[in-house]
Length: 140
Image 1 (spheres, rainbow, N blue to C red):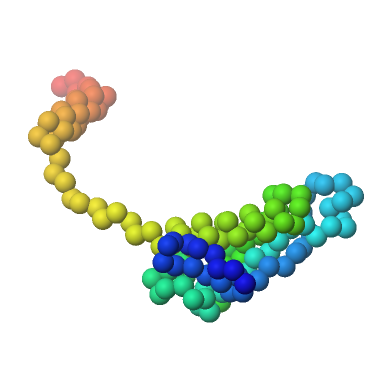
Image 2 (cartoon, one colour; image 1 turned 90 degrees about the horizontal axis):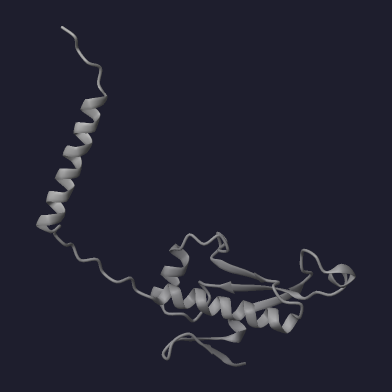
């Protein structure tokens, strides 16, 4: 079994996920009813050899493909051949894991510039003036 490289330091073995061939949905004529060309890829995150921060990021994600048991299910049926769908499913799995490993850039708080503060106040004054002009006129 070969290892799939996620980063230069992180990889997963091919036996950590299982693929089953199923019949594809949608148009395809008579061929779609007799050929199992779609692929279901199941990847158990808890049982994998991924580092803990990858597992935590994957399990905490709000991905609809993630089951309550922590199994990621990818259905690949874009192509007509089983081999292309297998490659597509594996590529999508690697992409999901790579995104989980990325750490978001920390946000640094900044102050608004003096001119942006003045523009904001001027805009508020202009809007207030427009709204006062909309009021009913008092004829006393």
